[in-house]
Length: 114
Length: 113
Image (cartoon, rainbow over all chains, first blue to last red; front, top):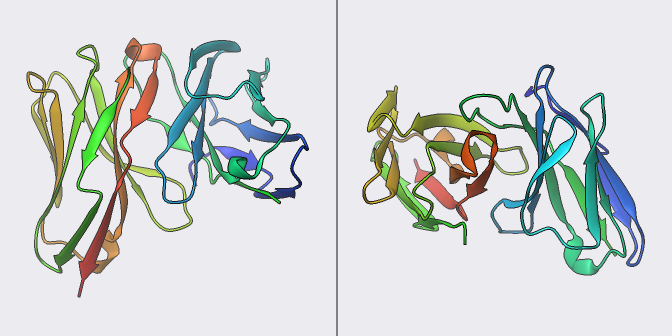
């Protein structure tokens, strides 16, 4: 168990809808990262938050947004969903201070858009 | 832009043989290079990492080497076992110590008994 909790585990929704994915980082970790993994694809970096502030942005679509709350949990919002958004979405967390520290991944949320 | 190239994309070896996976990165400021193993349907798990102040690190059957001049790093698995079969991802950090990890596209390793 990595200590990173993601909910829900599975999500099935229709095109055009909006969903929210939730992540609770490991205790003590200040950085939260979101990654998208499509079928047979690598891990695409979406966005990073550090202690409540956006720190880095990757290939995140404008239809997607995220935030990190004062209690350090994070949510990834996906709107106007398309079939191509079907993927496994991972959250990861790290200490985020000083030297770069290892990422610890949650078990992911599998999103299916029909 | 930020990029990590990983080769090969698939690798098949006989049990007991060695496996080598190679990665290159583009940002000369990168200083942290982890390797993750992802079994089917599971989360990526860190297996070994190396920082730029060392050239090699070993942990039992796994070793990682780093050539900062050439911006190359490699994963070496010796005496492979069927349970080593998985997808392996290399990564490099961008944006300094508070930055993010960019991953390679992965190598699917199959170890045949």
